[in-house]
Length: 346
Ligand code: UD1
Image 1 (tube, helix red, strand yellow):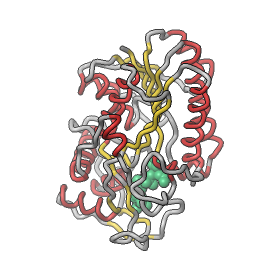
Image 2 (cartoon, protein in one colour):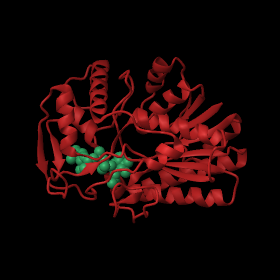
Image 3 (cartoon, protein in one colour):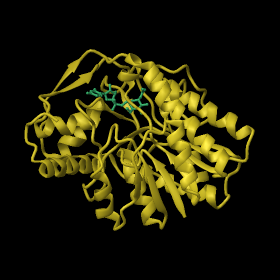
Image 4 (tube, helix red, strand yellow):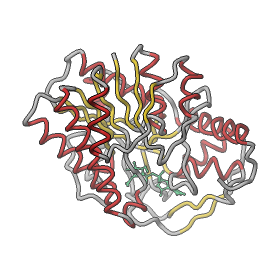
């Protein structure tokens, strides 16, 4: 059975392709390589033994997307990862984010309608909850006004999917990710930010390996145990496995209704300093960091109530924060060695 994975050479996409292949699915990837690299296909093949089918084009292009669907009549489900995801950039370039993230979704839904492909798994985000009134946050928590155009694209996308499903036979599962980090145990695939990383863990590993001078910790005056913000960090392989379970749930017709939403988190919140401490413990490296001002738009604390995913989806995050740090560090070193990078800027 063939699954279309959009954004399949990206961070979460590539790990999910490996897990799909392990479970016997065929995969076709569509990616415009705007934030990923083609050699990831070889790395995936190295891990799984199978090179996924690949087409490079932009899913925001209606004609190319329609043409793709008319050439592939054997797709049984779609996992739609392809999207821009940098919060700060979305504030600076909102139209870029709305056009890319929303138009590509419209084109995919149109393809599903025309070619009778009933199953969609959509990459959503805990950002839809904003700063929740109650913690841990469950799927029933209200959607808060988005803090950024990026967050708004996730909210609007969920609405577009719900409206489309209401008037068709399509089915969808939206997976709301908390903070995906870490890398595959082989260290052959991982997070590969272009330029200076926005996210915490790639910044930590790049600092430790000498590409960045020191980590800036954005604020230590939050109402948390050590003053730094709390997130629910989740290992990318745990996250990837949830996608395979979601795809099977759809194909095996186990869904309770035609649009389901699940939180993907561990249920445990860690502060920025907890993450640094774990990294230092696991690697034995003293990480240079300084406390600076808060970053605009950061929420104070958010972590998941994963009970619904645990019971209904039958999925549970298994990997610890230490394992996340260990795998992220091994990946950083593998990549540095592969590219002969020492302190050179990427
Ligand atoms: C954000 C988005 C999330 C999105 C994710 C991917 C929100 C609320 N969350 O997650 O939806 O999917 O980006 O891009 O918009 N930190 C530092 N120093 C750094 C970097 C980060 O101290 O150099 C801190 C941040 O203040 C935050 C934590 O580390 O408390 C995690 O930050 P980050 O990895 O950027 O993820 P989020 O902002 O939680």
